[in-house]
Amino acid sequence: MRIILGRGAAVLLAFVAFSFAANAQSAQPTNNILFRTVMIRSKFEAGTMFSIEVDDHEYWLTAKHILTGLKTLPAGEVSEKNVSLDVLNPVGDAITWSTFQFAVIDPGKDIDIVVLVPTMKLLDVSVRSLKVYTDNIGLGQECSFLGFPYTSAWTATFSNSGQYKMPFIKHCYISGIITTAANAHILVLDGINNPGFSGGPVLFHTGPDQVVLGVISGYRNEPGEVHSIEIPELPTAVQAPDNKKPKYTKKDVVDLNTGIIIAFMADAAIDAIKKNPIGREVEVK
Image (tube, rainbow, N blue to C red; front, side):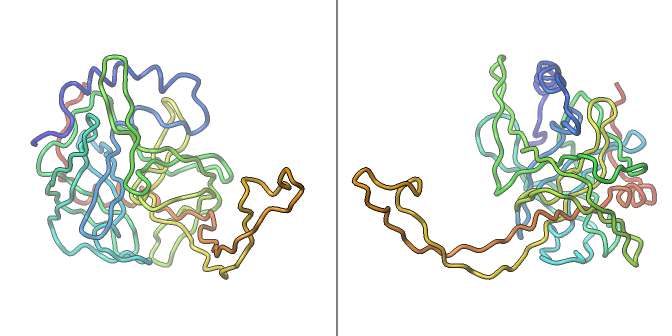
């Protein structure tokens, strides 16, 4: 399959533009990113990838650790000049993966972002991409991020019978910004992340002001103690009709997700692109 998303996508996008833009809330994603975000998988794990345009050339961004397989930061370096990834065809309800080759632009070993340039066109989308903008960030303000948790998507069905596999949307707040010794900028976000969102875009504002802030890297785990608690066998811990107390069983649970999300500012990707502008030229409409 030479193009994942065909000409029918332009009609589909025109149809859904109002439904996603109406009643916009803070950090609500727009069509400019929803239809540019796809599910990917490497030999290590699945994740998320999205496209941006820089100087009328297209680039794809994702988390570097999806390619390197490293589970902790730093994410390492991609030594290969070219890599292959499987991309899920977002059109229709069928699950179809296609393998694509990409040229690699690595922003640096301390940055969990990689820029990819496909050897052939992946999407044919009629809307322009969001801009990357990382200045004047309001601490404590709302943001959102997109992705495919646990290798899953939801399928939107439109009145023209078109179907499209959409990323899930999650909201977060900008909790802090960390600058590392290597001058990498890390966004610390307050929210709940899950496996599969790695590589997804972090978004700020909405409507025509919406921008890409960063790329999701992961979340902080908390290796809490395992507690043995009593779970009632009834749906609720109310007494049974015969006034007998419900029976309890033992169950082991553990807390994992701290709600601390780690993302890398996307300005590192722009800097790398400016040094090596090899993206595919896009038609300006």
